[in-house]
Amino acid sequence: MADTVLFEFLHTEMVAELWAHDPDPGPGVSAGSRGEEVGATTGQKMSLSVLEGMGFRVGQALGERLPREMLAFREELDVLKFLCKDLWVAVFQKQMDSLRTNHQGTYVLQDNSFPLLLPMASGLQYLEEAPKFLAFTCGLLRGALCTLGIESVVTASVAALPVCKFQVVIPKS
Image 1 (spheres, rainbow, N blue to C red):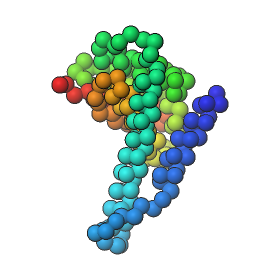
Image 2 (cartoon, rainbow, N blue to C red):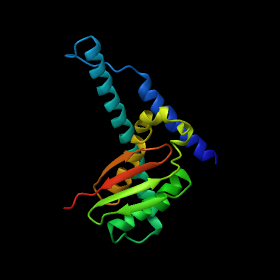
Image 3 (cartoon, helix red, strand yellow):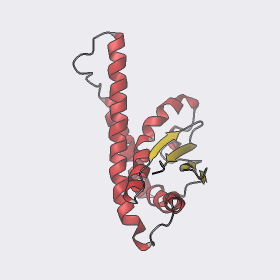
Image 4 (spheres, rainbow, N blue to C red):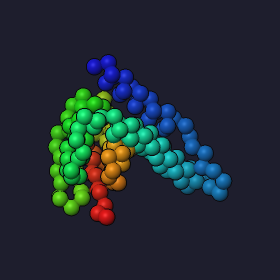
């Protein structure tokens, strides 16, 4: 229980810290309202990238440590099941609620009560703030998959809080 609270607090502080600083738009961006919007958008993309990078590194470490006792995964679906069960339990103390696939390299992982979105689930006004709370987890999934030998693209979407869907696309080689 304490681990969960500490992780959620750490995650919230990472997001808050990255969004607290007004980004310097750098040279070549003119002042004025248009320049400030461009600078803010660039800063937000950079913050999302930093959060995803942190998650990627954590996912790599967890991907190395967790599956030690398991045999080699035979298929992509086995790896995704591992993520939904074991990895999710290790990080969030619960299993993913649903895993769907089109059997063509696209997987949708759904969590109906995503712990990092629960504190803001009381109203729709926070729906537009949700993506910054999902970037770390997208990186976490991508990092674990990379360590297990699967290159992927992971995106997240939220239609209603605290329900979250992660889409994992694995390009065919």
